[in-house]
Each structure stands twice: as C-alpha cells, then as structure tokens.
Image (tube, rainbow, N blue to C red; front, side, top):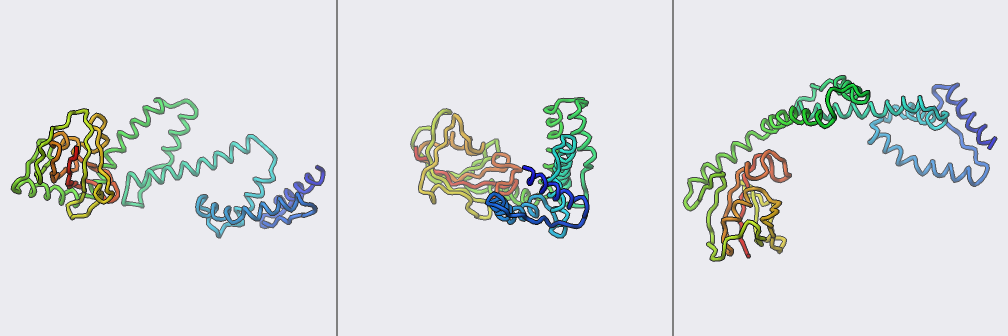
Length: 286
C-alpha cells in the first residue's frame, strides 16, 4: 500500500512541478503492474477516437488533454471540485444545445446564433427553483414558438416542391375519369370491384405501389410479394389512405392521388420530401 501511495505522490509531483510534462513512466515490478499497464495501452486507441470525435478535442492540443487527464486521475476526491468539473462538462452540453437550436431557428444562416446566456439563465432559474413556470409549461411554450419558425424554414426550403405538386394536382383534376373528393384526394377507377364496402372496423388486405409525381417508386407491396393489411379501427396509415379504402369495394383497383395535407405534409420522409403529392395504385383483395 505504501508503494502505491508513493507512486501516486510522484505522479502528482510531476503534474505540479512541470506544466509541459505529459509523460508518466510505468513501474512494472509484478504482474499486477503489468496487467494495469496493458489495460492502459489497450484503451489508448479507442480513447484517441473518443477524444477527437466525441469530445471534439483538436489533436493539436493532445498534450493539454493528457495533462487534464493526469490531474483528474491523480487528484484526491473533492466533492466541491468534482461538482465544478461536472458543471464544466454540462456547460459544454449547454453550448451544444444552443448550437443545435441555432440550426433550427436560423436554418441556412450559420452566422446567426441564439444567445446561450438566455439558455443558461433558464436552466439556472429552474435549478434554483426560481422559475415562474413549471418545466412542462415552459416546454409547451418553447414548442409553441419554435413550430412556426420550423414551418417557415421548411416552406422556404421546399417552396418549389410544394408549387410543383399543387400544379400537378390542379392539372390532374381536369383529366377524364378523375374524381376529386372534398378533402382534395383524387382517384381514378382502373378496375371496379364487385365486393362489399369495408366497415369502419374492417381489416382490408390490399396490394399497392406508391410513387411521386416524377414517377419515383418509394414503396411497393408487389415487390415484396406480400399483401398489406390495414385495420380501419386502428389504421396507422396516412389519412388519404383511410378515406379511400372506405370507398373501395372489395376487388377494386384504383389510382389514387393524395395531396400533402392528407399525406405526410411538411415532414421529410427520406424519398418523400415535404409537401409531396403521393400517387398510389391500390388493389383491394378482401
């Protein structure tokens, strides 16, 4: 035990007496010393990646990182100092939170930042119990203010797509055989069905292919060679699908045109961009 304490004292002395020394020499006197050293070597590669990519520490300042690591590993347990150091860690997370919020608010303008001071003030008032509202109420107000900003940013980014899809629907509505429902959903009967209409609680089995106005196919049960089932009592599909399925007798095959309001709206669904019209070929089997 005395030897271990002596070694720790020597390391602390290195930290205190030299601001530039980042070397700690191993003293390998037995197997325990060796296995400890081996563990350190084994950890080094993963720590280097963690330091650079997770902690965002510039490799140019690796020596400074090492000095901090030595101090943290060899310092005595001090609740006050520990609280302070943890506060620094959380403070960096607060900065990241402010940066992420800036990206949401200002979207394409990286020169603008939300004031991190206001974020800190809110957190501190909550921690001290001085906030004038509950956390849930504050988050509700936050969402109330953020949502229209996000909507405006999305609209600005995808305005051309919105316009092109609206123009497509306006022209498509004029075509022969196309029926337009009050919701804006359009359909064309390809093959009339002679079965019954589904009840509101029915399970409808169907095949379908979904595509965009440029012809891009984004989903197909035909390709999967497996019919798709919709439980109308708990549909879990877009509103346009629910409306149309209730109008299709069993055995029908329709081409359906769903405006963004009855589809995914302003959401970015990967292949399906905000404000996209969805065109489906839907074949009800039973």
